[in-house]
Image (cartoon, rainbow, N blue to C red; front, side, top):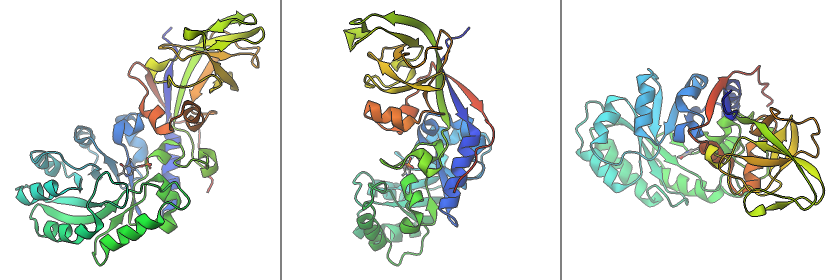
Amino acid sequence: MARPVFAQVNLAALRSNLALARAKAPRTQVLAIVKANAYGHGLMRVLPALDDADGLGLVELDAALRVREQHYSRRMLLLEGFFEERELAEIAAHRLATVVHHADQVRMLEHAKLARPLEVFVKVNTGMNRLGFAPADVAEVCARLSHAPSVAALRLMTHLARADEEDGVRDALAAFEMACNGLPYPRSIANSAGVFRAAEVGGDIVRPGIMLYGATPFAYDTAQMLGLAPVMTLRSELIATQALKAQDTVGYGAQYTAARPHRIGVVACGYADGYPRAAPNGTPVLVCGRRVRMVGRVSMDMITVDLSEVPEARIGSPVVLWGEGLPVDDVAAAAGTVGYELMCGVMPRVRFVTTEIGRVDLEL
Ligand SMILES: *Cc1c(COP(=O)(O)O)cnc(C)c1O
């Protein structure tokens, strides 16, 4: 038998989460964000579940070209734009849309002679201070691009730095409004957190990422509270058990000491599978459907769990590292990170299995 760790991707859950994004932001176009190999789920694997999106957003040109090879015909937006002028011919040939966020890109577009003009999203910096033009410069950039023969259509876009915080969007929206003042182009503002606040955030095109995969964009509202279903479940099995005596320690560095005699289980999943090495004693794991505590240090190929509460557990018992029954956000919080990083970090040696488990009921 093969090493038992695998990641299960539930396409029914992904469809349900996309339907929720649609329902939260009605009358807007939805660009499903699939950068980083669809947040680690496998872009080609999830593509069939994204039929209902108006298009895709990603940062990798090579991935966008692979999607076009699959005859995907809808809009695809390059979220960081292009890096060199010679990429523009390929972008035009494959009808990709591009972000433009700095003056060099404007110059390259003015310079380029393209077979087909492009849809361009002008990015406005509203406080994230990573990419984008200062609000005061946006009118001039749009004026220049609107005269460039290689530009077919303009959109205005920003990315919110604090859409997940109660009071986090007011200033950014005011800055965006100022930048867009009087410009007649469609607008794209909301990420997942913004989609849940669509009435306040507004815009014509939304860009949900993390919510599609069933994790929460918020610190306090859980995925379950939001009506999101987990898409990825990382599963494995117990491959050994040990009976500890009081004062026995577990694993490298003896990071856990048994206060009393109890059993532990050894799970075939470690940091070389993408389990976070920073996860401390007490990080939740499901064994036989029951929530137990991880004990001892995460090693390359294994973790160890306390079986005190699961007397029936034995070699071969099913384990969930995150996903169905154990939100990835709970594991991420214990490890001091976010669900995004855990899902993106599943390593190449982990097998993937695609399912369409049952019907996922959408509660609005
Ligand atoms: C990643 C990304 C998104 C999606 O963000 P989530 O928090 O995952 O919803 C939206 N817009 C841009 C520009 C992004 O880079």
